[in-house]
Image (cartoon, helix red, strand yellow):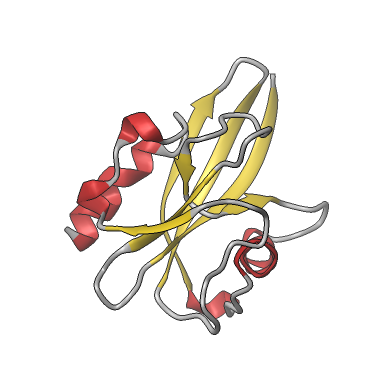
Length: 133
């Protein structure tokens, strides 16, 4: 089974809400809510990938120094094993906006529903609740 490394961000606003994005129709796991991020390009460090992905997906500018590792998920899907570090980010420039047709929502970590998130994202909720309430 191959290993797939992806990175994700918990963008946290001044009210301690986290930004989540809904996977658009036509994508695997469409309709589920996830933390923004994506795959690493060859030779790319996780922080570099996340800075790039947040600019592409949301149109926000993030500095790598503003990404703080929080936790990670390790999940076996049928065709691959996913390893996903989650970074906490409280500073960025620009207003997050949908650039790939995905719906966006701000939610308190305690409001996130594991049943409405991909299996790999669900374990990331508890550390956010412990940190932010």
